[in-house]
Amino acid sequence: LTVYLGIASLLFTLVALIFFRDRYLKIFGVIALFSLLFALGKNFLLFKFIYSSIPGFDLFRVPARMMIFFIFSLSVMASIGLDYFLSRKLNKKSFYRFLKINYILVGLSFFAFLIMLIFKAKILSFGGSLLERVYYANLNTSRVGGQDISFFISKIPLVYKEILLSLIFFTFIYFLFIFILDLKLNKKITLKRFKVFFVLLLIFDLWVFSAGLIKVESYNNLYTENDILIFLKDNSGIE
Image 1 (cartoon, rainbow, N blue to C red):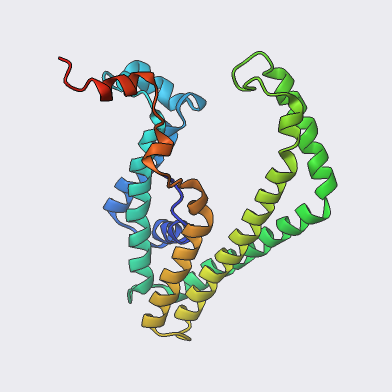
Image 2 (cartoon, rainbow, N blue to C red; image 1 turned 60 degrees about the horizontal axis):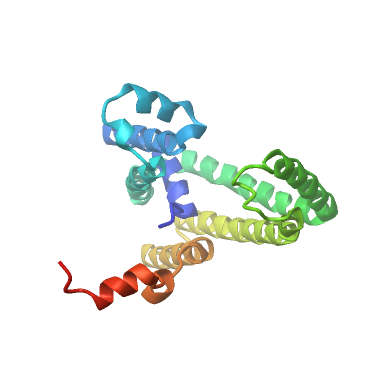
């Protein structure tokens, strides 16, 4: 399971929150915010307070599962935003300003990509020094996992590469979403073509950022047999 909903979902959630006024939107907004903060678990005070103060919540073993309600709420709000964009109620003047701000954000994202390219050596050096501090601070804990520091240092260039690729893909997809919204707003493309481009781009977005997080493996590879399972299979009739 991945909690990534795509750039379009975040965009239209913002559209709903900025341009649309509805009591249901407020309800789902509260649910989304509560779910997100609760899912942070021990990293935020909300979970600690609710866990110790409200009966029944102490039975929650995995607070991150609350992200299911966050995903659902954000999906509802994004659909409200998309419906508003396609409706006749759309305030085009205000939406033009919204698009301009997003074009600026796309430019800043691309600028961040260039900064990472230019200062690659310094970023890798900073990553190495940060890793050393974290490693030796957790040397006697399970976080290190018994691995030598050289193992983690060898992963720094790979992490840098993944961040760089993610940033350029994010910038490119972000720009395309804003661009097709701009085309639709200016009636440069028909509604039918907008829907086609939008769905294809949404699929591409989810594939780029989510496909690697979803592991599809054989049942036999996930659950290897051990002595207990073999014994139970060979003695299935034992009562």
